[in-house]
Image (cartoon, rainbow, N blue to C red):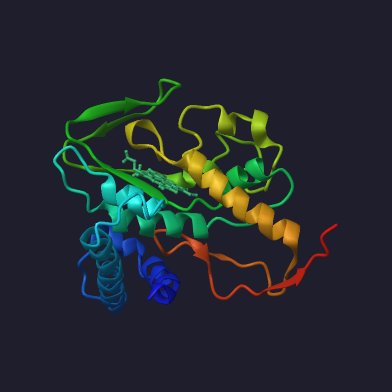
Length: 247
Ligand code: HEM
């Protein structure tokens, strides 16, 4: 049953197109595939949650992330965030790649160049005016309008001198100093609650892979597929791996 999960996650990620953000119910083939994968995913995890609840086996016998999510609930008592968090967590952590050297800064820089979330969307509940810092332009945002904070800001010359270059040494540049210039994990009240966990998870996985295997990119360096909500490489990426002799 669990064997299906990676394929379902891949299906869910690949079927989220940019159009999905605006018209999530548009009856296009990719949305139908997404609905089928989502239904199957729900089925698998509902079965597991039911069987854990009915057997009465709780924290004592399952000391894992799923059990924590089963026990967690919002103030009003509902807790259907289990599946959503599993999907989001897996999609986001699996599309973060290209690591070498000082891992933390590499992960951060990778996410700057290839952010997992392209657009952060908010509904404006009231009208407000935004003024540019230099006092120049003024923008009015009307109530009920959708405001998008695209992560293209990562590629702007306003924040870094060489935006398209992979630079691990970027730590002192304004890119990481200016408020909300670096939004790979969002910002403000709804910023990611789990950036520290995500960094740790990615670094643990990559330290293990880099220590144990010699990896070589066999196919050309991939272009990004920017047409999806959580961008990843376009097409197949072939990597050869050889087990290292551990000292
Ligand atoms: C590389 C990995 C990750 C990236 C790039 C990432 C990125 C983000 C971003 C950009 C947001 C803000 C979304 C918005 O403003 O609409 C967000 C929110 C969130 N993330 Fe992450 N995330 C990652 C991993 C995780 C993990 C591992 C978890 C949980 C185990 C997690 C849980 C959440 C939650 C619950 C929120 C919503 C917070 C709120 O609305 O108050 N994220 N994440």
